[in-house]
Length: 64
Ligand code: SF4
Image (cartoon, rainbow, N blue to C red; front, side, top):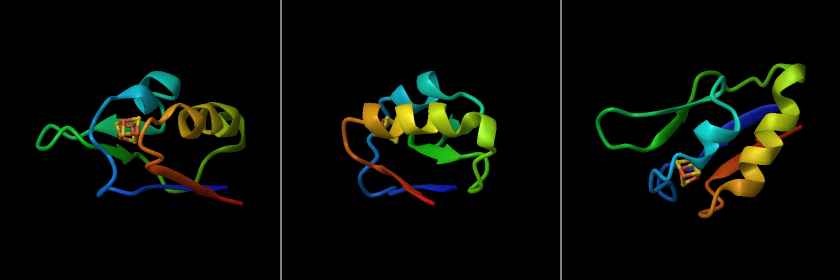
């Protein structure tokens, strides 16, 4: 499973980081989220799915 953030949609709520702090960080520069790795470890897939559902901007995209 892979995950990317659509930077043009992200406004920096930080909900993703709350859902899965291992995979999402917020930039010190613009406050937007970025992923710590594009490849999601199997044990974090559920938390990343939760982040996808919780993002108010639909800015997180996953691929199988
Ligand atoms: S929840 Fe969505 S909009 Fe908010 S910081 Fe994360 S990716 Fe960006």
